[in-house]
Length: 131
Image 1 (cartoon, rainbow, N blue to C red):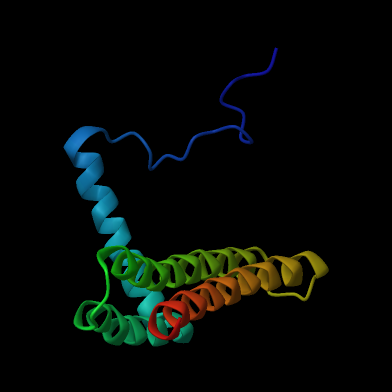
Image 2: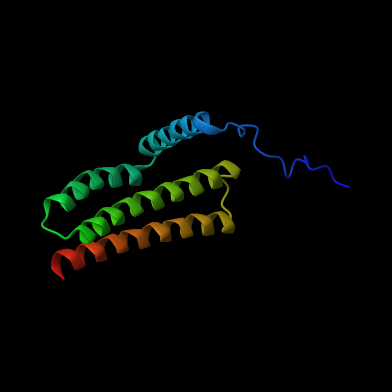
């Protein structure tokens, strides 16, 4: 019988906090993630600046509440996908910086997800503003 604590099935030693302490820690880790993405990822930095223009613009423009929700949501979706893409790229680079077909595939798929989120943003904003 295998031990449940085998190295391939071990939980992270950083897990284990519960309740309010877990929420406080999670918030801190999230802030660290935002800082790291802003410092190390040019695309995320550009998207932050774009969001600082587009989100207030969504509230400035005369639009229905649902349209505003879609406009702001599409901006936030780009940032979410970019964060996930950056995380995938960091893990791939951590595993190995050597060229490998699977590493390229993972990075290309992440990039494709960001592109789709940006297309989604353009379609939503275009339809609302010009449709």
